[in-house]
Amino acid sequence: MSQDPAKRHVLDATKIVITIARLQARIAERFPESGLSRVAADLSETAQATAAHVRALERPNHILRALAALAVVAGIAAQIYAARLVNWSAVVTHADVVALTQGLDAIVNLLILASGAIWFLMTLDRRLKRRAALHSLFALRSFAHVVDMHQLTKDPTVILGPPTPSSPQRRMSEFELSRYLDYCAEMLALIAKLAALYAGQVQDEAVIGAVNEIEELTSDLGRKIWQKIMIISRLDERAAPAR
Image (cartoon, rainbow, N blue to C red; front, side, top):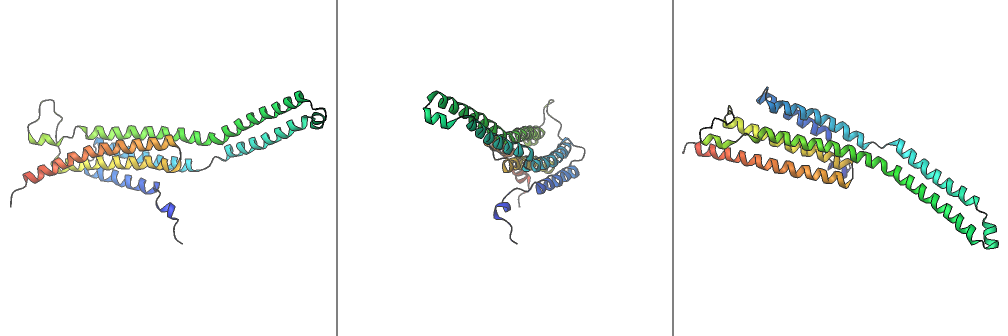
């Protein structure tokens, strides 16, 4: 049986979790006991929590749906009850405008209250999911800044000259520095993918806007990292012996 084309183009949370776990293992093997390795382990745990959270947001809230249905039934019943309280035959026979106005006013007031209660219950599930998604997206945004802090002092240009007394200690070779920066870029890209999971489940303008902001942030930070990697590659080409 062929797979639904719509589902083929949806991010798979399980595969993202596996990819992040594999990246965490690669970083731990290359840079054991490093700060970046600990950050990668935290990202792996965050990915698992995000996948579980997204699956929870996908499930409908049956309690709220039942309350909304109950509110609809109660609103209809209230309208019927209010309509029965009015003696419509007397109103029509005697042309009692005051009684007609009072009856219609009571029915309209009940209709407004019932509609408000129904709207509140029907949108409550979406608003709760929006709040939960925005809270998680804020945490992912902060995570992206943490990754950026780890690569911030990894400046490849120090290779060109002696460091100052206040310069950070450099123990990495050019190859290790390049791999370190590449791992940071991968982590930023995967953070954006975790954020995109929420846009796929919570169809809300605020959530989609927050996801777009995270994608722009991680893209900008990743672009700066790749500029450093390009500098390292050019230094390697300059240092290579001429043939």
